[in-house]
Length: 199
Image (tube, rainbow, N blue to C red):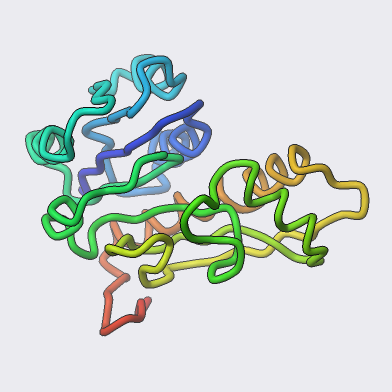
């Protein structure tokens, strides 16, 4: 059974999606720790409700974060709305074992400063007809790691950044992230060079 640490900063809707899928028996995994960068993140409450070990790290160093994750015994680190850039030491310790969900089809609308509503505002400003979400491995760049999976979502004529954000979460993120974790837990994902190979 794959042991997972989930790093969060907000309401934890993606965390809930993972919890739901595990509890339904859809993923051979266990969340051993939820760590938040914000003390008031509702994601901590979600962890508490499901009796999952949880901790607020805040603005402490990545060394503290790394120690917390390592002590949990986690084999995979999942960034689920974690609004903090990981330091190289953390990435090196979990090389090709950290995944992130991003609310666009990378390489579009990603990189430094592209998170939350900003992504969807830019999508609407440019006028693309399709957006979506991406799950990728984390490397030292910003949204540059090998892509595991993507799912497209149509942009509707009357969309606002808020409605688009909600639809991307519901139609893409909430299923894409648990699906990627399931593939990893089943041993079907490997990184060859700069690419992901799924068996």
